[in-house]
Image (cartoon, rainbow, N blue to C red):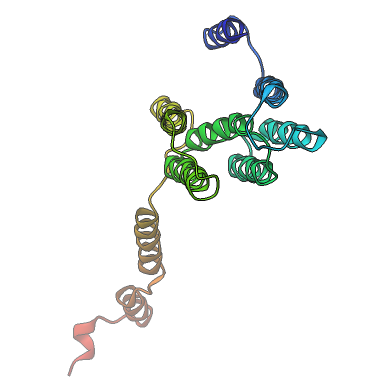
Length: 219
């Protein structure tokens, strides 16, 4: 499966196979749904609740939100995080619901929101570690550090894609609010100068209509 996915990515990147963005997102959502479903089926954890129909509904619904990940990255990020928290609060085995969150974090960073992606990944990791220590009274294993590293890697990978698009001019570069205010102030100042009445020209018009010069009006 991994080799097939890698080959598909290479073919699409090289332009050999051309697919629309919606079709690519549909393929990603379908692949994530398959991975999550399989992971829920084989997930086993001591003291955890056995996966039932609700667990599969949460997993598939979280993967389905990836269909609109390009158009609504923040909505997808929030939906996958909520679904993940709901899944774990219900006591199901850990692990399967992480995959949609990884894709959502990558998409958020790829949309130019690296800080939000890193904060979200850090918050999820911190909550997971605190839950294991305080509630389950379990020791922190190596998998925690690998999960954190994976979340950071997904965010940085998405940010790298965003920066490449900026370099190639595929997306507009974000503008600074201060520069917008300065430009707006310059535009209004120029407009005030153009709308300001010219007293000299009006005085000259009045004198020309009377047929006199300023020096002739003096005694």
